[in-house]
Image (cartoon, rainbow, N blue to C red; front, side, top):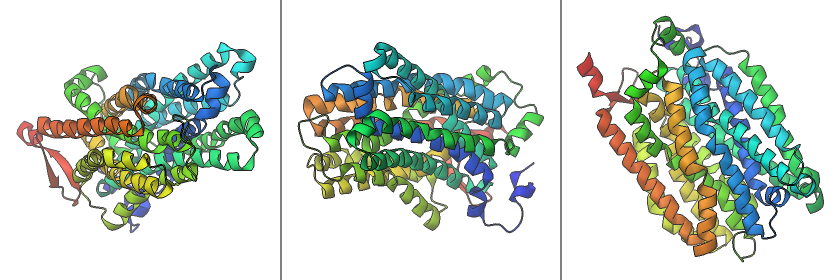
Length: 454
């Protein structure tokens, strides 16, 4: 059965309106919560360093705080596997339920933790444990939500659906940073250090409750149900995954640019603006600029959706990677000037590269794996790249800046952009794929080997 014959997708409703429905919102709210927490944690890195890490050097405290930030990535591959198995065998809806429950409670309890001053190292250990639990949830949340929303979307609209799910990531991070900025302006420094930072984490519970309510009311995608009824899910999942293992390895490299770009250029860069890693004074307006610029890639993607909804996703991904590689050094030369206009230009150009990647990357992942292993294969690829390369990015960049200056951080971005570009070319060559238009006019990747197998 094709989704186009489902009553939900029939009628005269415009394609773009169908995407923004209850199912998409239910999936996106979990992403919002995930990235809201990450935005809050990164924006509060200085206070968390003071409360949970006993060092008198502010720059060392920030780096230790980012190490705890990276701890959440260690367990992400575990979550990708466990929730991936749930999603590929028990259903996409079941995976979404599991991930949001595992995410909302650790986020709330971080706001309840005692500080190092009152509980010693126990507070630090508890923070790391909660970050590990969050990592398990996050390991399945984004991919499960992505697969769920794209499988529900009509064929000609899957690229837009995947891109809009990436927008929910940006909105969540923006919300996290925005809440922290508003709290810092509304409260005194003493109040922010005592209770304000806790409130920022507690607010995530509200979104989690709304997300659970909405996810109760949605069903599994027709594509998954048809595969289940046809017996496609009866093959042992590890045997099915092994067939596509080389694709998974290459996809790890392809995915690396996504978390590195986001964390380096729109989260970690906040520390450069604040001057916590160097002896330079804070850049006026830096916190407000960085908070606003986190929406820039999303605004760019929305512009593509409005003007060129048929924009080739492969062209988008490769151009974005090439642009980031070309702009890495010039962007950080501008950052090093520590003036508002230079920082604005730098983040604007980097946002274009990130937006191009975020537009096409979800559908590239989705189209690379079959329905019976899609959640797990995408989860392993996405989360291993995040754990091995994305999570350590704030710490690596902090070390580079402390020892060699702001410009040295560009080396990491240039390396990852080049790696991802190479891997996407190797992935397409290995699979023998070509860009073609299907019967609906969708620009998609069609395996040549399918025709041979038929």
